[in-house]
Length: 126
Image 1 (spheres, rainbow, N blue to C red):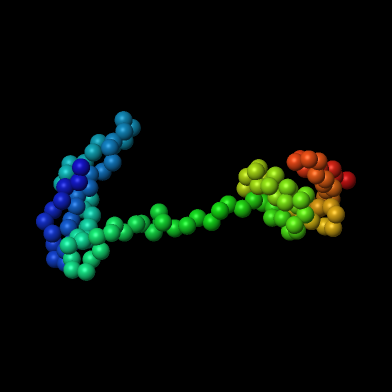
Image 2 (cartoon, rainbow, N blue to C red):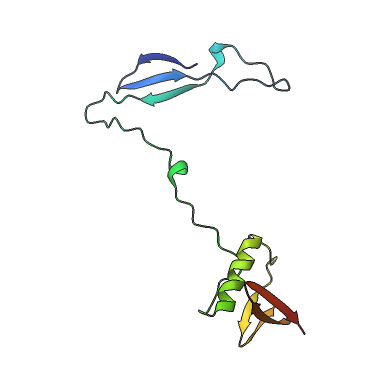
């Protein structure tokens, strides 16, 4: 439960914020005289907006996670491979490059032959 103090110059209100609720393993809660004081800018200042300002970390847009393989052609097999590897999650290829090389693919130094069987990607190496 925050305790508000009298407004200071410039419309700033100081608010005393109690520390988080202690858990059985944490240190005891300090007395109120040792609680941190957080300045809060009052919206009563002329020209100030009444809209709360969001924290920039909360509003920052996060780019969508990309899989380890990105399809390089409009081929059905290449798109299906991208979806299959993307479903496995980031890091599933462990940093080894998977590159399309003509009709086959290279996974590191190994050559892979892929074919689409319905909605499954069949893989053969050698």
